[in-house]
Length: 132
Image 1 (tube, rainbow, N blue to C red):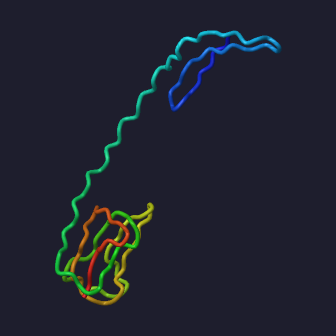
Image 2 (image 1 turned 90 degrees about the vertical axis):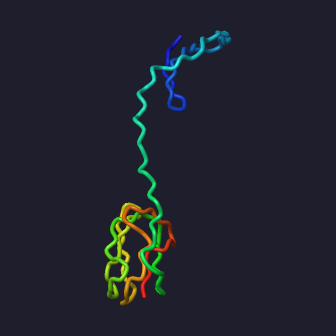
Image 3 (image 1 turned 135 degrees about the vertical axis):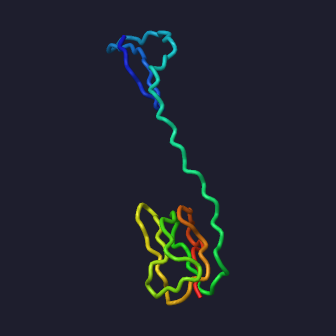
């Protein structure tokens, strides 16, 4: 008999196996139930960050809508309702796929509403800001 340690679905079992010689008929041996090896310490559970409430719009909706191009998390909001902005100015920064992405003003205007906040999770197409 030979002893082996076998891992199945992350659990280790100690098993005894009998070697069969050439030409010999295998012998039927009733094996004891496999006993699990000493369990490893389970890693401490990682607590998920608390879900943030959906941010409330800060003003009436404007005519130019700026939507999230992809899912991510808002890192920084640089403008507030009523602020004047110029074309190309950074309005907010969000993180997607471990990269920070700047959302810039598509044209000159005034921020009509900010529909997100720092730390908010956004999906592709979610309304972030509006301009007039």
